[in-house]
Image (cartoon, rainbow, N blue to C red; front, side, top):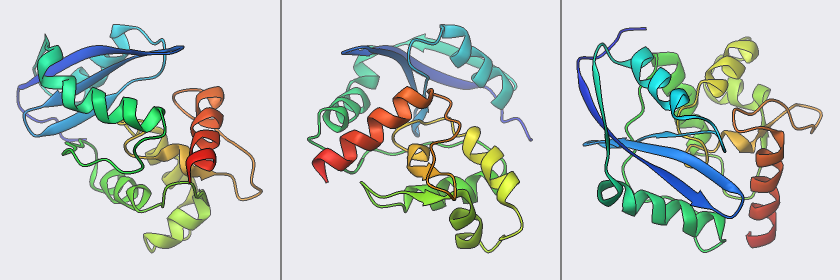
Length: 173
């Protein structure tokens, strides 16, 4: 993966009900939504992996619009996100992440379905790896991707979070 030059990454801790998660954005858009209750180290490690040099600045004011959209989603008042996203990954990851953004609210698809949508039907395992590398939980809805047999499978935020997000979307669909 090609590292990009120095980036300023603005971050804040978003606390809502039982979840506490770090969110981050560059000047171009939301670039990271962390796992619930994960340490700041998860965000720092992600940034160091993606950029040759980063400056992490706590800035609740910059992140406030993103936090509000996430809270509105969690509370069932929002089904789509309107603010820009700044995704950093390989070209293959970018294609998979775009395909996930096309999954309608309240619906699920399988890893096999995503592989077919991107015209790489034999790449189910690689699709799973790309989905697992999604840096923007919730907004890029990897929680909507399930196993072919309908079972919930791996999720960076944990299976409990994945189940909660799917139940939320079912409730407010």
